[in-house]
Length: 63
Image (tube, rainbow, N blue to C red):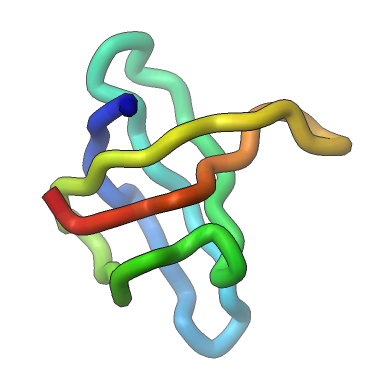
């Protein structure tokens, strides 16, 4: 599991970005990848998989 901080999340649009603690890269997150409700600046743990446009976070939980 990776860890990071929610950089941005728009609940009405159902997507956002997480900053990965290790690489400092942005990782896309869609509402379908969430286990817990998240908000901006929440500390989270997550897994990643390759999507059509890059890495996607899934199994996202508040840390």
